[in-house]
Length: 251
Image 1 (cartoon, rainbow, N blue to C red):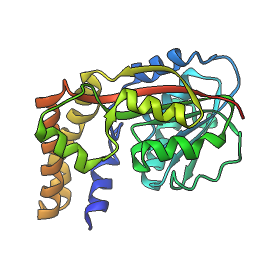
Image 2 (image 1 turned 45 degrees about the horizontal axis):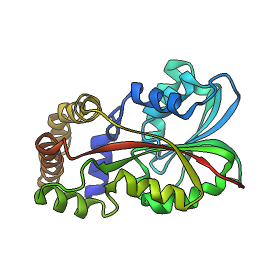
Image 3 (image 1 turned 180 degrees about the horizontal axis):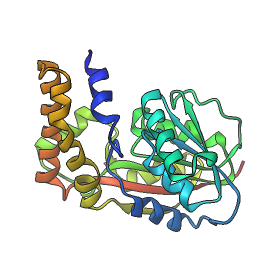
Image 4 (image 1 turned 90 degrees about the vertical axis):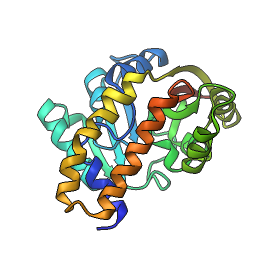
């Protein structure tokens, strides 16, 4: 099994594949001023196993298209949706976020928690804009520097992992440049990293290594994740995920 398949196996049982929280999803809905009673058409792009999709289905009067390129994750979402009784509101779509088969001006809201980095923030907000109705909302969380400078060790790590990491003001300028009017921003708290994402993943490490015979590749995957956790615990004052909420301007 290659490293990519191992990563899928490690994360497929997780409720989240990145930092986030149900309260923060609801906070973003509130900050966006979404009318919860209005019939809406929503796309949750890069939904993983569906933590954000399930909250949107619970809180909104919406038909949701949940997109992920991994069928294994979407199967987990469907199972969770059925157990919660919201499966009738959700359609899953296995495809890449850089080749979405949507019609122009088809959605009221595009939602992307911790996923837009897969194609890059700038490319994502530019390419997806056409799928929004005039006045439609883009809501995305994106890893963000919280200070203008940071320790060199941290800078090297995240610059190597994701070269588009930047401060919030730079991300907001990107939104403005590509035809959006920013209407809200907030930072995910520590709980969204540790309690919602890292600690549950750490609890899966032993079983993951056992499933794969404690192979060198499996141990390397765990070691890389542990390194990321160590960096967060050491430098959490310097970065987090920011939630960006913006409205499409014009047609």
